[in-house]
Image (cartoon, rainbow, N blue to C red):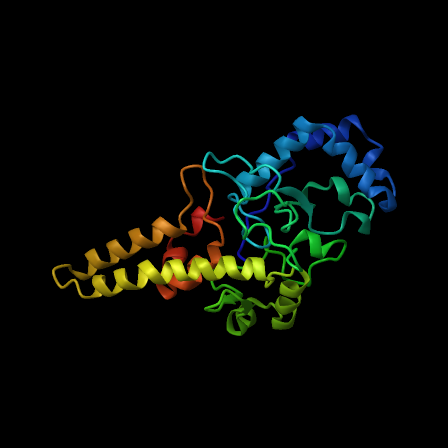
Length: 271
């Protein structure tokens, strides 16, 4: 889980849809699914809101950080959806509330991926599929957690757990972080294995490079730092389309303290 940017204004197509269908957002919460289906049937409006969320969230699922776009920056067919953070059936008006909309994956339910780590049989659904109509525990909405000082850790085998020190510093309950990990099933085998692969990749290239850099006596301290910053930027900085690497938090935590310093110096790229 990482800090995710929020939409700063209502997407115009959604505003137009509400204006042209004034009774929709006033329908009772029990009809929320029908309200949302009505909006989705306006494919152009739905796609524009989707594109706005892709740009805002830098291509990642709000919850698991799976990459939801291809190399050209377009959504990967079949593995994305607009998610309601607060259950749309929980109160009148939530279904069309733009501040309640985020980008999410389909939680491992799309069976046509060639990449087995995106779809795996068994109890491997996650994110909105397991959250269903529940609400996130207090303080765990990724749009409100701090960027600096991750409230989660990723261990060597790719398992998420709360970072007690950073949770305390951020005023977030360790118990609630553990609850959201369980609610979204973020430690299912499919996601755990993907994060483990990411950590193994970092360990295979970054540690040897860091060792070589520290031993490079022909470089002065400023040159070493410049090289280190370039390596980190190559992994953590958004690409030319503005999107991040999948499982960005795993990358950051595997790199360690040097990554945290780089993030603190480049917060504008993520806010």
